Length: 295
Image (cartoon, rainbow, N blue to C red):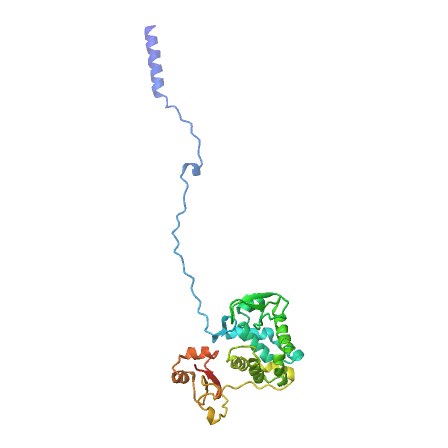
């Protein structure tokens, strides 16, 4: 009996040793849960400067227009201004008898080709002040005196119409209407004489714009006359008394054959740019007989 017990015990012990270790139950986890999240490595991008384009150079010139405000304009800007208002100017010439060339030249000069302070703030293209008979809106602007009263319009076309009515309705401008309708030189000088502007160079500035931008062609469209563009290279015969300077104004010099801006600037100890600025010149073109302010 005792032997049987011993045998049973030995068999149980052997069975226990030969049995496998308890299995650990595991579940297959998703790879994404087991592995650490992968972060895509990207190289830090170096900022790339935009490649500049080589735009073709242009012959656009600039000038400073000094009237009720100082305005820097380009020749393209002036040409666009002319195209925008030439029809209104010709309409006013037909209705009121004022040369379209004078209207446009005054508009360019007084408004800085539409970019001057009064033009932008008040649609005032001719620098017309309020005066006692003005009942419309107004703005204050420094001119001959501080904070003077200037007329304000809803649109530029109203300014053009009021400019015509202003000239027609004032007795001091009556002499202007005795000139030929397309005689822009007499009109330019007459405006200064009648007191439209205090600048002694006002007529020359108007004539300069008219001739540089061929504004007289619009007078001819109204009158039906043939228009001949001004040839800057055409020589003009001068009297001996005017060979070196204007007999009327010692500050003016009359251009002679062979003169250049450089030679004139040296003669009067000026820089070429200063000479161009004094005379509102857009380029270096001169014509014989042209009068330049040199002082």
